[in-house]
Image (cartoon, rainbow, N blue to C red; front, top):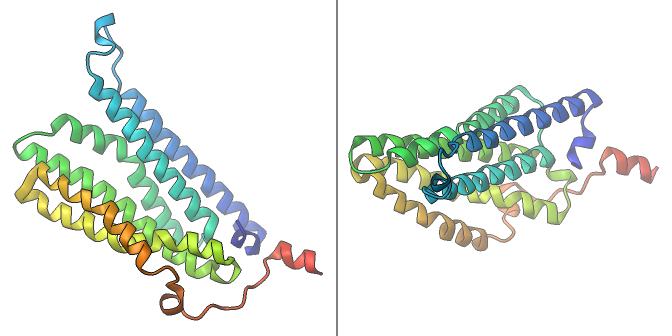
Length: 227
């Protein structure tokens, strides 16, 4: 939120409206997940299909993670420029598609071309989310670099570095779908260890990625307080 205070009041208001809009989109996605649970016709049907509950809670956790990612994007260095707004709307559109792609995948999973198509849809959705959020993170971090403290820079850098591993692994998995079908999902198991290793390799990467560390510039509120 530190960078937002440096924006003109009109842009600050627009960023707040965009943040509210994103909350609505993500909330709508969560409600769509609940609508996928059919009303049981008999008492025996309540727990007859436990996989549906597992899918629901798993998908809820995934969308909630995307909400946290959205909040990080908006609070680090987002500015309502035309390109940033297009990237943000694209990111939110893929988040809104998560319930559909996930339910489609779980219902059509199995041998045959349908499983491959459903898997491609599922992975394509995640690639869109990862790619657009990654670009937004890079743009926001570069924009807000001078007003973030050391801890905020480190926290904002993690998703940027993670994107260097997440996006290629997802693309590799999608490319393997035509030949491996649903078994391509196994490649996603590499995602977590690769990201963890990458985050440990470069603990302080800004010296050669984002340039020398600039002097910290006071935000609008801090400058007023100093004066």
